[in-house]
Image (cartoon, rainbow, N blue to C red; front, side):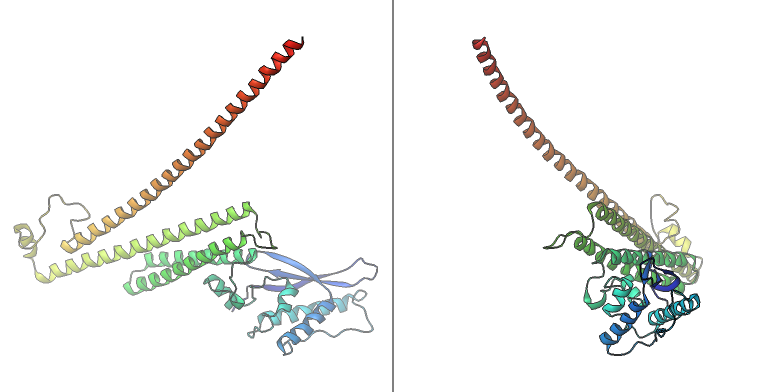
Length: 364
C-alpha cells in the first residue's frame, strides 16, 4: 500500500550560530503540498523517547548512536552516514503496517501534520470515502485536511467518469453492469464527501468564543465555488449514467421485440397493417418506427421525465429571479427612505440658512 505522506532527508546544513550544529532537512510530500522541516539530532532522540512513552512499545526502528569523540559539524562522512540512518528511521516508521506510532501526537507534532492526517493509505481511503477522521472528529475541520478531502472528491469523480467511459466502450451486458455499479459507487462516495466539505466550510467560517475564523471571506467563497462545481460535475455524471442505463434498457426492449417477431414468423408485419394487435399511429418517427407498444411507452415515459426535469430546472431559475426581484425591491425601498431623509435634512438646513441670512441682514 502506498503512503499519503512521503518522508525523506535529502540534505543537511550547518547552522551559523555561535555554537554550530547540524540541521537535517526533513522533506515531506503531502497530496496537495510539500514542505521542509529542519531538525537536530536531539529532536530525533526526543521523538524516539516520546514514541516509546506514548505507545508503551519501543519503535521498530533504531536511531543512529551518538558520537562522543567526533562532531558531525566537522566530519562530513559522519554527517552523511547519520543522514542516511535518520532517513531510514523515519521511512521505516512511515511504511510499517502497524500504525500505532504514526497515530501518536509525538509523530504528528514532529512532522507538523494536522491532527486528522495519518501516513497510511487506509486513512487516505477514509478521507476519499468521506469517513470521519481519527478519534471521530470531523475530517474537514482543518483547512489543510479540507483540501485533502476535496482532492479525494476530485479522485472519486475522476474514477466515476472513467467507469462511465469504460461502460460506454463495453459490449457485453455483464461488463456494462459492473462498470455501472462501480460508477454509482464512486458517485455515492462523492456525494458523501460533498456533504462533509459543506459542513467543514461551516465550521471553518464560524467564529466561536476565544477563536477567530480559520479562513477569510474570500477563501471561503473560493472553496464554496469549488464545492458547487464538484456538485454540478457529480450531477452531470449521474444524469449521464442514468441516460446510458435507460438507453441500454430501451435497446434490450427493441432487441427482444425483434426476436419475438422472428419467432412468430413472417405474418406479424401483415397483422400490423391489418390492425391485428399492432400499433395504429398517425405519423411515425425514426425513434418510434422500430418500437412496439411497450417500447413506445417507455420512450414516452423517458421523454416525460426529461421534460419534468427541464421544468424543475426552469422553476428553480424562475424562483431565483423572483427572489432577486424581491431583493431589488427591498433595496429600492431602503434607498427611497434614505432619499426622503436626505430631502428632509436639506429642507431643515435650508430653513436654518434662511434664518441666518435674515439675522445677517438685520445686523448689517
